[in-house]
Amino acid sequence: MDTLTEDYPHGVTCTRKYDGRLIMIEGDYSSVEAINSWSNAVMKIIDEIPIEGPIFLIDDLSSLKEEFMAHAVNWGRKNLVALPRYRNQMYMAVVLSGTFMNRIGSILLKQIVSWNSKIEYKVFVSRKEANAWIMEQMKNIGFDIESSGLDNF
Image 1 (cartoon, one colour):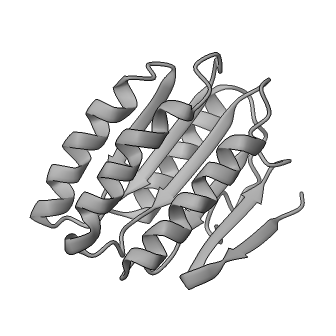
Image 2 (cartoon, rainbow, N blue to C red; image 1 turned 180 degrees about the horizontal axis):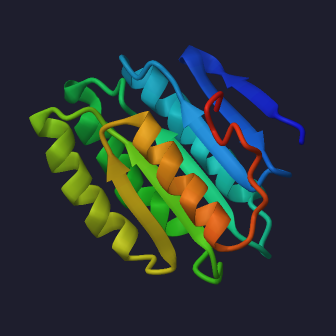
Image 3 (cartoon, rainbow, N blue to C red; image 1 turned 45 degrees about the vertical axis):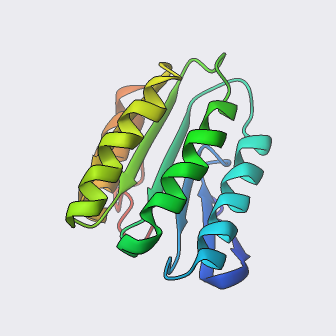
């Protein structure tokens, strides 16, 4: 199983496994430029998602600074509707820190993602929990997950 990693400006990284079906985005979101880099990476990923078959996305925003949450939510409001509405299986785990603003952001995220009801998603405050949930979803639909799971992902 190959792992493909793409680096974007301002410390944003996208890693893909399982023939691109499992995607993880992470970075140090401590500036508007980093949020913009994240948004560009997400849009590129959306454009490249195969139409057929399941997709599993872990979006680790745990380093998102509170002062940039509004910027990220505003971007999501405008752009997440671009996720393919015809996709039968998309699972998204979003990791946010447990701060007050991030909790408010997770409520707004729920509203935004619900516009595209074919996405099954959860918000977590721990990457380990997000990985476990995604791994469970993959197993439930028949993916043969290696014994180490997503430990190094």
